[in-house]
Figure 1 (cartoon, rainbow, N blue to C red):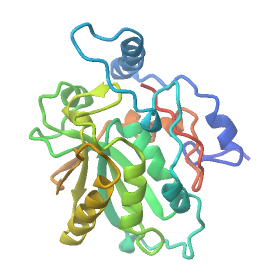
Figure 2 (figure 1 turned 90 degrees about the vertical axis):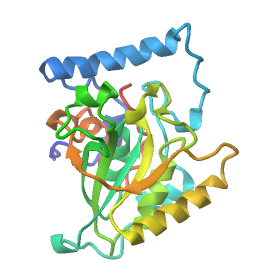
Figure 3 (figure 1 turned 90 degrees about the horizontal axis):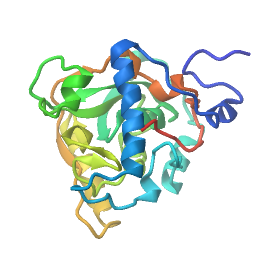
Figure 4 (figure 1 turned 180 degrees about the horizontal axis):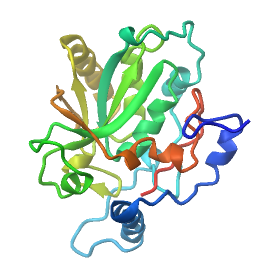
Length: 253
């Protein structure tokens, strides 16, 4: 049967292997598409006055390499939850930033217990920013993903495990070839309980690296949803968003 767009369907891992050109959306879409080619060009032709980025193959989400889930994240993404809650009143929210929000969103879309995801911009000083505003680096926002989840099915700590699995937390204001303050990593907590969990997880994560962790843990300020064409972007482009799918995620850029 035909799947609903972005929902993932039987056979969608096969569809995910055929990475399609993402849809275009007028002038903004053209700019987004141009960014893809700019990143590819940057990989092949490093800026003469900028040091080449240190290779981080285990955290790559570019077109050439898909980023698989690590063992701890697999246990969360691939499991079948004991409960399947439907009560919207029981939803809680988490907000994370880990570089380009496209791939981060898809990683959370696949987690059982996550009801919905929204990409957007957070902790800046300009109201209702556009993608172009944020990319200019002048608004102070980070590209982020808002995750609405059922805590009976997946805990906040488990979402943190998936979060840390998706990026290199030692990189400051960048992930791979995406460079700028909008690509900083962060956990934006909405309660004192989330703050405590976030700080504890950051401390534990720091034990895994020789370099210091650059991820900020700060209160969530206003979250501004991104433009419609950014929402569920990689799923629209053909990658699987089905719950439990473990296909390596490839980001267009």
